[in-house]
Every structure is written in structure tokens, then in C-alpha cells.
Length: 87
Length: 83
Image (cartoon, rainbow over all chains, first blue to last red; front, side):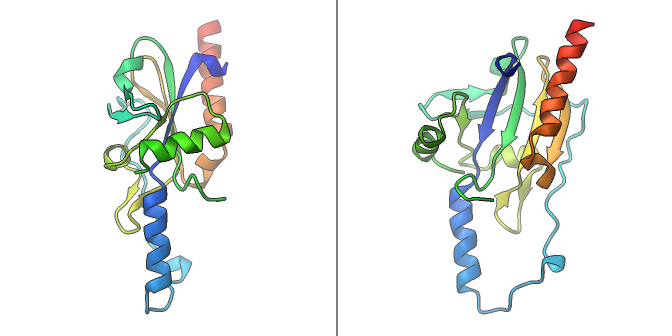
């Protein structure tokens, strides 16, 4: 079944992760309790809506767009944040 | 947000065969509403999109770490095709 789906993995991770680590280690303020941290974003998108198109670069330097798959394949789009951590 | 070379190394390390895309400019995470302005990074999320470009399933946050929901959504495509 996997072959019937194009799985696209987006990796918005490592730079943000290193920035976050720096922020947490250099801050002089006391750590914020988990309950006071901002809630993770809830997407404005809904099931049944068109998926926003994008054009991003893959590991070979090739441009890949969601529209490339239109009419051809279903797509599983995974935003895999903090990919280089154990989380 | 990761560079393509970093993603290539990651792909080699874990042996994936599907495209790993770099959202270096953080546009896709913003367009998909999974970008946290405060922390500066996105949240884990999975969107299942059909051939016509319509969103059929969404998983966000901790539930997106477990691929079961997306996997089941993919099975729904198969059942519809079989009917």
C-alpha cells in the first residue's frame, strides 16, 4: 500500500532546534512552567479543503511541488520537526 | 528549515526512499498552520491529501508522532477504491 502513496517528509527542524537550545541555556529568566507555555499551533486547515501548494527542494536539489502529484498519486505529507532528536 | 545537504545526510542515515523536502524559508509550515511563532519552529503534523489535492486527514502534535491515524486514513482510500 505504501507505493500507492507519495510520502513527503518536510524537515523544519535542526536550525530551529539549535536556536531553541541556545535560548534555553542562555536565558537568565526562570524556566516557564509547561502549563504557561503557548499551546502548539492548531492548523487553520480543515478536512475537505484544498491542500496549499508548495515548491520545496529535495535531498538531490530537485524542486518538488504538491501539484506534481495532482491527478497521479495520493500524498502523505509529514511535517517531521526536530528530526535529529530522539523526541 | 533544514538545508538540503543536511536532509541528504539524514536520508542516508535512516535509509528512506521517499522525498525529504527542506522547508528552509518556513513557508510550508506557515501555509499549513503548523508554525509556532513563539518557539520559531513547527509542530509535527501529518496531512493525507488525495489525488485531487483535497485534504482527507489531519494529525497534529503528539498524535502525529504515531503514524497509525494516517495509515488508517490511507486504508480508507483503498476501501473506497475497492467499492
